[in-house]
Image (cartoon, rainbow, N blue to C red; front, side, top):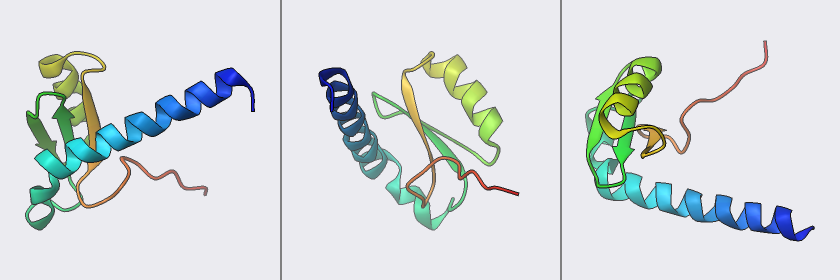
Length: 85
């Protein structure tokens, strides 16, 4: 593995750990009441919950600023799942 690819993988791994920690600290409690909804978590812990992913991204970008939040589907370890038809 080249040095650039190794650095990218390490950065990605750190981001995943950070995002998981933000979810556990600020949004995990939503699993009982909002399972399946979408949540945006700002780096300072503010959250937005929406049923519509596009609306969530628009509102989070407006309130928190571009690239200043993470998104997750409540109760899942991913935001969206792509399916082949």
